[in-house]
Length: 379
Ligand code: COS
Image (cartoon, rainbow, N blue to C red):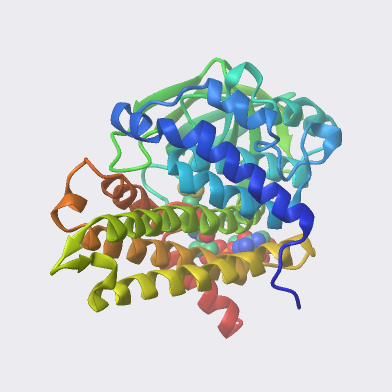
């Protein structure tokens, strides 16, 4: 067992940190304030291989594996959570197509996602207005008509929904979880309508919209895998995605800790720097320890995924622990800032808002505990 990064991993992490701090971090506050995303940044991410981290080179990716993926994602999120989630959803969608799609589908779709063709991202469309946690209850339908499927329904909370070139849509071709199929729907397909944009609390640079399917006709060649495996595709993709959210949460938590450390060094109280007050030292110790533990869980899940092992339990453990460690990190770091933490003058206010959704998206903490308990209980 070796806790050291290899030289290659260190180089990848250093590169991601440098890129994230130079290119992404300066615009983070603006993205939050304006609830907007400069799509040129998608091309910059693509040029660095960050949109195809899990895709083989044959299809335009860089195939760096999950261990490197979490190293990169943590750095991106330390700079800007919105940018990290946009990146994460592109990678999750691409990896699902890579794992389950036909050769022809992969050749058609993956190079475009990896290159952010036309400065567009990719979207993963599972949740619906009436069902998020209970994903198998989805109602969107895909009716076979000759060589096509006709899709109808509404997808909710779709990250990248307003700026994607490809949409991975789970829709029903039959009853039950085994009656769900997956389709890659290209932007611009008649009947694919972008609905309401959500006015979110945090991660405001990433758009979250409804995607409405109104008699949206999709050729059968764009189905991902066989009919009826859509739920398995979604769950497998989320196993990987949850490792990514573990890393994203760690990035936000690390940014919060960094802000706290800066503030502790700058400000004095009772005749000494804040960092010499034991009550605040305890907070720093708790944040640092929990982030470290979360990182080990996340790395372990990534290593196991790279080794081809099942990671359902480990991914959920990484996600729930990291997102909750992140929640504590932003909360205590804000507390350390006192009143200044509660106003927009300091970045900790944004980080506090950005952190909140990590306990909700890609499976709420309660769902992660369901998954973990089922695995532990063997039920
Ligand atoms: N990997 C592969 N297959 C999986 C799987 C996984 N991690 N989890 C479940 N499956 C398969 C099961 O093996 C089962 O297949 P069979 O019927 O062939 O045996 C099928 O999927 C149904 O599984 P299950 O009965 O466990 O489904 P449930 O409806 O009980 O739901 C949970 C399981 C709660 C885990 C699921 O609904 C879930 O993850 N919900 C959260 C969804 C989510 O994260 N949404 C966020 C969207 S992105 S913002």
